[in-house]
Amino acid sequence: MSTNINFEDWLALTQLYADYASAVDSGNWDLWPEFFTEQCVYRLQPRENHERGFPLATLSFTSKGMLKDRVYGIKETLFHDPYYQRHIVGAPVVRSIEAGSFKCEANYAVFRTKLSETSTVFNVGRYIDTVARTPDGLKFASRECIYDSEMIPNSIIYPI
Amino acid sequence: MSETSTVFPREAHWESDGTSRIPFLTYTSDELYKRELERFFYKNHWCYVGLEAEVPNPGDFKRTVVGERSVIMTRDAEGGISVVENVCAHRGMRFCRERHGNRKEFVCPYHQWSYTLKGDLQGVPFRRGVKQDGQVHGGMPADFKTSDHGLTKLKVATRGGVVFASFDPDVESLEDFLGPTILGYFDRLFNGRKLKILGYNRQRIPGNWKLMQENIKDPYHPGLLHTWFVTFGLWRADNKSQLRMDEKHRHAAMISTRGTAGKSDQVTQVSSFKESMQLNDPSFLDIVPEPWWGGPTAVMTTIFPSVILQQQVNSVSTRHIQPNGHGSFDFVWTHFGFEDDSDEMTQRRLRQANLFGPAGFVSADDGEVIEFSQQAFESKPFHRTLAELGGREVEDTEHMVTETLIRGMYRYWRDVMEAE
Image (cartoon, rainbow over the protein chains, first blue to last red):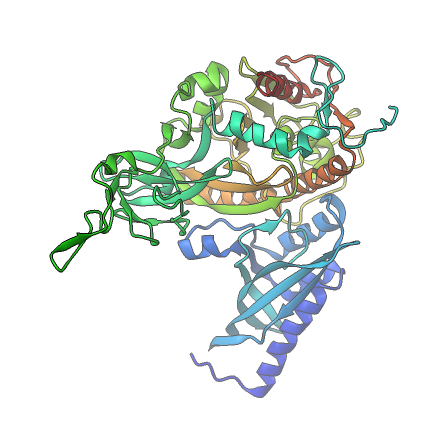
C-alpha cells in the first residue's frame, strides 16, 4: 500500500472526477450509471449517520442495475420540480493505492437552481470512493456521498 | 367558484358546518398557526419526542422539539426517561447545543447554573456571594430556593419503546389520548420488542405542517402520484383496505393489504401506471412477510399533531413533524428495526428505505406536492381546498376511495380551534 501515484494515473483519476461532475450536471441521466462497476456501491448518507455508525442512507444502491432503476425513476416516475444542479468538486485526496484500485476522497458542493429562482446551496459534503481499474478505464466500485447539510431542502431527485 | 373581492381575509371562511372544503387561510395565517401551537402542541396533546433506543444508557440525551420549543429527552441514573425544556431558568438561554450525547448533569455555559438530568437546579455559582476583606459581596437573595428554579419539566409517557411528552400537566393518559382503535395499531408495531435505531433522514418542507398529516390521511393519492405503488401493487385503490379513526377523528390508521400487481381495468387507467416497467434490480422489493403484521402489508398511522408511524412492508419508521412557522416544517425520519432481526432482515429494511425519505422513489414527491400547494395557498388565501371524495361525512370505511380522514381531522380542528 502506498499513496504515491504516477502522473498517468493522477491524470486519469482527476479526469474521472471531472467527467462525473460534468455528467451529473448535464441532465443526461443515462451517463451516470456508466461511471460505476457492475457490482458497485452508491450511497448518499447524512454525516450524522456515517459518524454515529447508523447504517441508514438517504439512498443506498448496491448494483449498477439499481442506478439504472434510479435513472428511470428520475425520468419517468418521480414527480418533481425541474431544476438544474451544478457540482463543484475539489481535487481528490488519494488515501491509498492497492493492486487495481485507489481509495480517494474529495469535497463537493452542489448548487441548485429552480426555474425562475435564484441559485442556492443544495448539498455539501465529501465523496469517499473506491476507484477500480477496469478494461474500460477507471470506474467507481464505491462512491459514498457523505453530506454535511443538516436539512435537505425538501427533496433530492438527481444524483449527487 | 366566483372570485371574492377580498384576497386576504382576516378570518377563515368555512362554506358550511362541514369540513369538506378547507379554507386556504388555515395554512397561511400566523394567528391561526400560533393558536395551533397553543392548543395542539402545548396543551391537551401528547407529542412525539423519540424512541427509548435513542437513549439506551444512563446519562444519554437527545435534543428535539415539541412544537417549536426545544426539549431534551434524557435517561437518568435509575433508568427513567425525563423530558425537560432547553431553556435555562436563569437568563433563558437555550443551553444544550449538541443533538445527542451523554452527560452526568446539564450546565448552562453562560453562568454555569447546573441541573440534574431530571431538570432540578443543583448549583448556582456565587449563590452565597463572594467573601472579600471580611465582607460578603453579592449573592442571591436569602429567600432564593433552588427548588423553585428547575428547568421546565414535561409530563412523559412511554409505550412500546416510544416516548411522548406534554407541557400540559393535566393531559389525559397516552392510552386515552390514542383511544382503543389507534392504540391497537400502535401496539401492533411497538409490541414490546426492543428497537434498533437504523438512522435518520432530515428534510425541510416549505409547507404548512398539517399538509403532512393530510398526506398520510389521504389514501387517494398513493395509487396515482406514486408510480411504484400502483405498478407493483403496493398501494392502490383495489387493494383490500380499511380506514380507521379515534372517536375524535384526530388520529387515523390507513390499513392496506398488497394485492396483485399489474393491470386492472379501473385502477391502472392512470398515467402513473407503467405496465412494462421492470426493475433492473428487483431486490428493492425483496419483501418478506413478518408474523407481527397479522395480515396487512402496510399500516400508516397518523398521531395528531406530531408524528406518523410508518409500516410499508418491511420498512418501518417514525416521521416527526417539527413546525417552524405557518409555512414550513422539518420532517425527521427515524428508521428502525427490531432487536431480533436477522442481518438479512436489517439489510432488507435498509434496502426498502430507498422508497422512503427525502429522496425516496415514493416519498420524495410528497414533499414536492406539499410545497406547491402551499405556494398557491399563500397567493390565494380566500380560496379553499376540496376534500369530497367519498362524500362529505366523517366515517370509518372498508375501502380507500375517500378523503374521510382529512374531513375527520378538520372536524377535530374546528372543534378545538373555534372553541372560545
